[in-house]
Image (cartoon, rainbow, N blue to C red; front, side):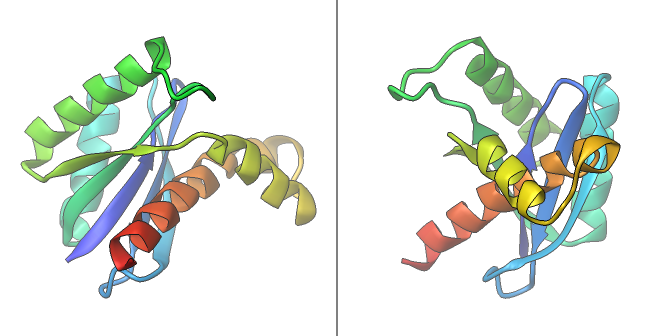
Length: 137
């Protein structure tokens, strides 16, 4: 069984999938998410193709730990994803993952359109890595 990490966004959703041992991120991709139903269908397909048994959705909390409108949208997306896949959904605090993803891409000279197309997948990887480390403890 693999675990999938999701960084849900308005335009693009980052997807990261662990290896079979659930110890590292094995692959990443991005799916368009302006149409929520299409994004969910794409994620369901990826989950089936990759034998995913659990999904972790990033939960964007405010720096003080409170939740705002964006967190509500992510919780709703996670609920719909759970219904569509039948898989357990974990919500994972994703504070600063997008900032960290931008920093990582800057260090590797990813700029402009190249960065725009990659940042969500990197953020999904960071969400998944955090969750896998937590499970490993």
